[in-house]
Length: 286
Image 1 (tube, one colour):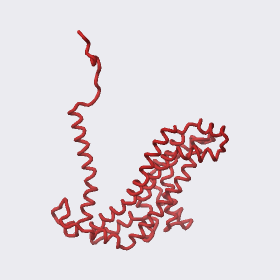
Image 2: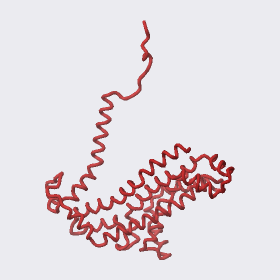
Image 3: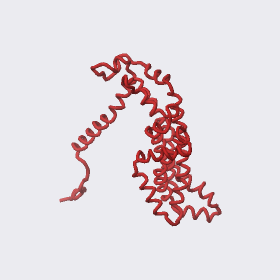
Image 4: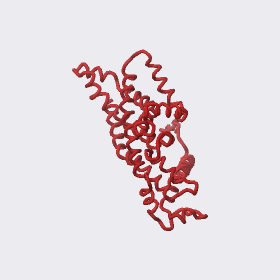
């Protein structure tokens, strides 16, 4: 009797029923996660009477852009948007420069206290930054940096710097040292090795880290609301102004929340192609 080709082969995997059940659970979970986003969009396009109606509706009966117009015309909205962009870009740029150089030193050079620095960088991320708010305020006040965009930018730089150093250290450590040595043998200087070898291959890490830093700095609320006056805050703090003792303007609040999320989406769409391209190029060169 001829032996069947698949005899003795064990197929490992999920059954058809299990696959259907897993996909169903995934779809339900995704819908639950997307529902708050949908409700924000739904409320943003509703007039005030529909927003405050006792019976909620899942689609605006009379869609309107009045809430977006009200948000744009609100006091300090455009100023706070500009403040947020300035603070975020300064913090991200500073963190990338300082973090990259620190990560390069930790990953490429042996020096006394190197392991201790790595542990300190990791431990700093475990400390709730809100616990340092009062000492931070007193420190910035002593150098006259409270109620200033520079002071907040420095604070955000410190906030995202540990993650930047830790992440970029992993990327730099993944670059073989043999590439450095080969470049030095070919006549490159240390600076040329940095610009031609390490920096290009660390591109994906810089891009990924900038995304995290941008989101962290753009979405931060407590620090800038504590340190600065309303004229020098960001859009996250501006959203609080829609909640007063006389009630909450839900329509403009939801419209403002959508506008606030647009810069993050645009930033990600701009660099997402660079992430994929950088990862592919790094895989080929490595």
